[in-house]
Image (tube, rainbow, N blue to C red; front, side):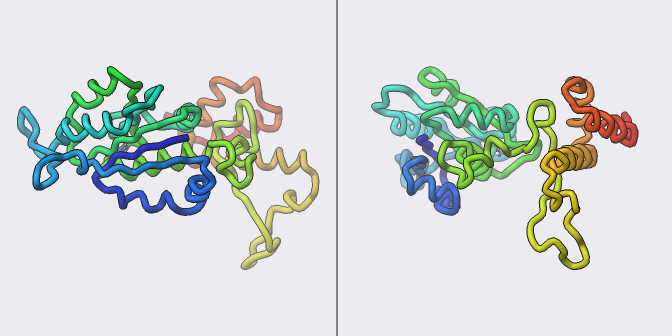
Length: 260
Ligand code: 6GU
């Protein structure tokens, strides 16, 4: 997969040389290209922003450098990339969203700063390529750079050959079907005793059925604590897909949950 990132802070992306993503790049699985938006400015001060029409606080990114940057990065290609615009007003970025993006051959991520990018930039780009605005959560960042890091990491680890353990991405959850959308329960490694705490004995039992059941139950408990709405969703839609012991625990957890 090729990923072009257009930003006024190319140095922000130094972490993409490390770890999983750095190795994927070295292996030729990922072709990440960084571009400084200011290289498409033509004034002495490399100006990328201006005051907003209609008044108001802050600055807006000028359309001209963005238009030229996108023309230049996409020039001469047989098929256009998908343009991703990180913005707090975008559609929510989810794991499903990441899976869809991971099947694309070429993404361009355009990092906005200040109060955003002139709205004609995505409207113009849409004439030539698919464009999507995405938000990584309900909070406001100072710019799209950190959101872009999140999106690139989430998408990259889904690419074939990027994860050390090829199973980890598909098997992010040990569970399948209705249980897939639960949080992961606790995990343990050696030693079996540490600072007076023991690893739950079932994990040392060698009984794979018992281990799987225990993990599903712990996932249900963790989800009840941290994401109760996910548990209510499971109960409302997919109760019939659960095993009896899972169903019984789910009903017990729902009764203990503060209702609305
Ligand atoms: Cl993608 N950008 C900014 N600036 N803030 C955000 C965001 C993106 N997603 C959530 N908050």
